[in-house]
Amino acid sequence: MFKISKKFSFSAAHTLKGLSASHKCSRMHGHNYDVTVHLRSNTLTDTGFVRDYTELNVIKEYINTNLDHRNLNDIMDPLNSSAENLAKMIYDKFKPLFPELYAVEVSETPKTSAIYEP
Image 1 (tube, helix red, strand yellow):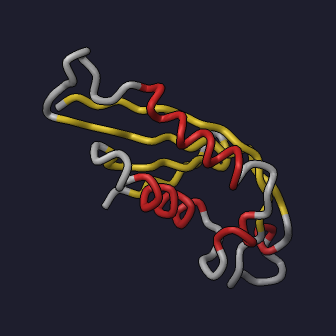
Image 2 (cartoon, one colour):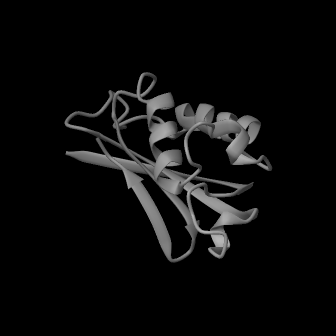
């Protein structure tokens, strides 16, 4: 099995629904997000790739246009804008374009990440 990954970064704000008023994440706040897409394949292309990294630029374009410097609550409603839901949303968006995609990881801080892998 061959595996590759590529990381993309963006900044955005959000609030999390369903938390107590005293929870800091119930208030508007922001993160410098890292999104890592993970692809795998049993075989390689004729050029020796799982997938040419430049083909993944469509993900960067989507992130820059739709997520960067936005309020994620506006984009993800009615879902709660958790890292877990964001990972699944990005996976669902790009799985049809990249059959090799098997997981999406979203990190809100250098010490935390959420991974969606069906």
